[in-house]
Length: 487
Image (tube, rainbow, N blue to C red; front, side, top):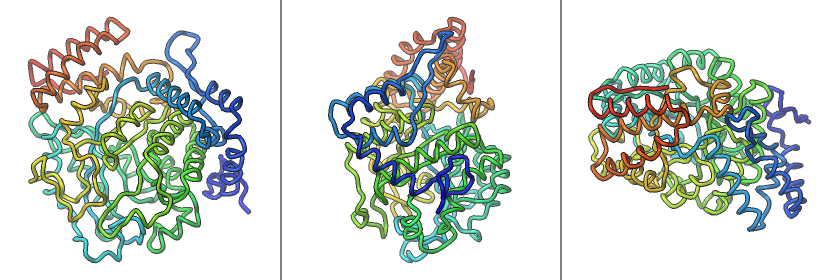
């Protein structure tokens, strides 16, 4: 029997079934231990650094975090939400990063039971973008105002080999249209080799994203009956290979609804602990998708669905447990759910998303092709509508990619986050990239609301010199074609 060891490189030792089940039992036994819960929340709160710059958070172990998740007391849950919001504001402020998915190909050789791209689905059209079509998609995304993409492709060594992915990345970065540029390409493709991760790193990717789907090995193998993805260990150990290949920004996630949410939550935090223990840096992002309807997929077939309230609680507990990690919620969720999750820790959202292969070029903002969608999009608002909504809610929409392009990745980003330089670095960058969006792409209503927000947010930059430079760059963006200023 495998023994739990967070420093092990073997999947069944750092994601250990026996340890997860013992954790869930411990959490159930202590879910009404309010003295323990209060001490866990107190431990999790941000503490001012001795030099007065920034805060430090201890985070939580998977057992401590699981106790919070198991607690059903309304008063304690309210306190969890308060602590989660406090942590989010301490390290990410009121900035929300925007991105869009770009689907390159839905050819796939796997048999995943929850995904319409599975090999046996014969009535979904199969499509793979040519480089000219990739270019058209990028121009369409630039015309919306996007600067950051997450590329997606099914696993198919014939149709979607690593060479195809690399060629697409090169094409994306090469497109300069009007004032538009894609400045960061995150990659969500199947688990691969150290050599291929090195190639992705050399191609200039941002974050490598791979959802575990489920940490329960038995469920994992049932849900992936055929294809290379069936190999639980190879998939679960992918982030270690990515790190070995030089990619120090990696993104975790599970697909909530496939397995017990308490099991998945414990496994997710254990994976973050493992990356910290082995590589000295945890995940750059954690995504929280839920199973959604799609061609040939009925979410009701999975009996582990969770309510909106529990979904929000999961997000809050992730934020408390892994304080420095960005958290992503996509357009799988509707406006109301996304609003709740922004309060408790989400720092990145997609906007104006299409989950079809070739879903942007040639379509108006109100048109949406459905034939090759990977899942139904619940939040169907345009990017401009999402940005206006964020502004109205006191959030600063950000298209910033500066940290990645200045080499502030992995532990270097984490140190920036911890030493309090967010307001002197990320906040100015957010305001300048928002200005770019307002000048180049926004509707008149969004532009007016956005500039009012920027005027107020400039006052929050602590250092006078940084504030003065930021204000000058904002004027330069407004009055010329000068773009891409960054700290």
